[in-house]
Every structure is written in C-alpha cells, then in structure tokens.
Image (tube, rainbow, N blue to C red; front, side):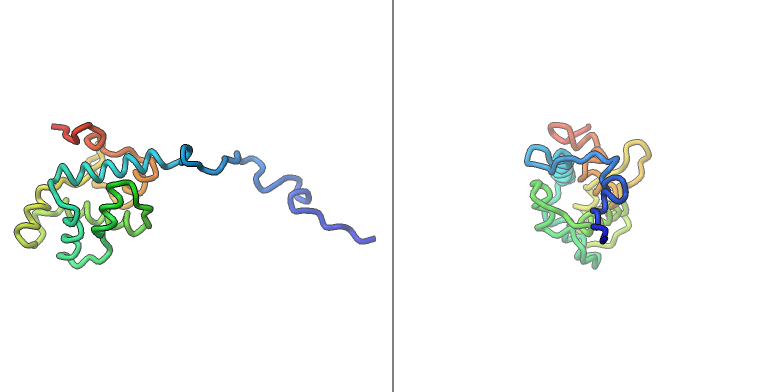
Length: 159
C-alpha cells in the first residue's frame, strides 16, 4: 500500500508560522512606517528651511565634489513632501551629505555654494553629538529613531 504524502506542516507537527504572531497586511490607516515617514519628511523640510538652502543645494554640493549618488533634486523634493519611496542609496547619500556639511569649513567650493553649506548644520545625535549616518536616516524613515527635537517644533527653531 502506497503512503499518501502529507503536507509539510503535518509531517513536522506544526506549521512554519507556529510561534509567530501573524499580522494583517498594512492598510492605508495601518501602515507600520507611516508615522516615521511623515516625521522623516518633516525633518528634511525643516533642515532645509533652517539652513536657508534651496532644493538644489544638496545636488549642487554633490556635483561640486564629484559625488554622483545624490541626493538629486527630484529625490529631495519628493522626500520633503513624503512622496518618495527611497532606495538604500538615498539614505547613503543623506549620510554623505551630513558628513560634508560637518566638514564644510575645509571644503573647497565656489563662494556662494560654500556660504550656503556653511549656513547648514549637520544632524547629530542629541545624547552623544555623533553625526547621523546613513543607517540613522534609514532608521528615522522607518520610525525606529526619532528625529531631532528641532524637527518637531512648530517653526523648526530651537533658539
């Protein structure tokens, strides 16, 4: 007599999901990263406003320094309006941008661009003073790292 094959879950005594809580798929009102995305978008917008820089300033800096990975004008515009579904290279470019802002005094740039970059402040961890890295920007987008306090203020000013 031939034995009828059993589904994998009955042969192992349980299903592969045993012990894990199954969550319903995200919906418009249950998007698990929605709040993080909104705060991330606001943070970028306020960061831009606080520095008094234009949408194209990050791309101009990247071009001036020979960095070809952005953030590009369209990425920046979409991100500040919470319309971007970023790829990892976008977070990498934000980490790079933040590091360049921190070393602005030593950069050799055209005078108007240099003045804009000098007016910007890098994003740092409030507790350690360490610069935010690519991973920090990604964590903020996912809602796993809170944006700086100034990004949550009504007018973006902590002074």
